[in-house]
Amino acid sequence: QVQLVESGGGLVQPGGSLRLSCAASGFTFSRSTMKWYRQAPGKEREWVASIGSHGISTNYADSVKGRFTISRDNAKNTAYLQMNSLKPEDTAVYYCNAITWGSSSYWGQGTQVTVSS
Figure 1: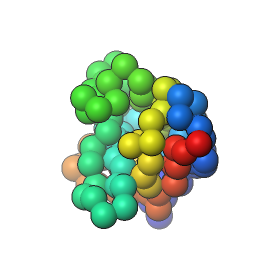
Figure 2: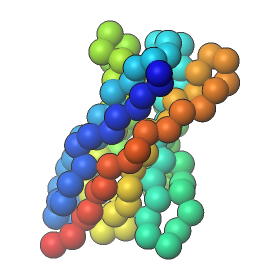
Figure 3: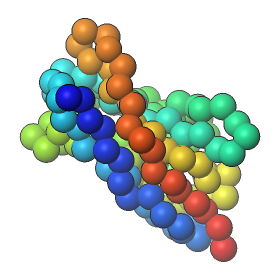
């Protein structure tokens, strides 16, 4: 049974930091591309960042480049999203997404990030 469980969301002041985690099980994590998406109220879900299976190749949306860092620990089957210099417009539900070697796509349930003073 495939599971992706996000954690680490919460309320943070502008300029603050949060680290999201995505714990994976039920598939070969080390051979999967991991991605983070977010969805703000009233808006479509948007891609935030991606990381290749070996953790070498990373890509970011322009809106988060230089502030967010995606990483992974294949020994722990966990992906991370370090978010620094947070802005109110970063407020959203953040989802992790796994694209497996067989091109299956799995989603977590999401974690709420609220940036507000």
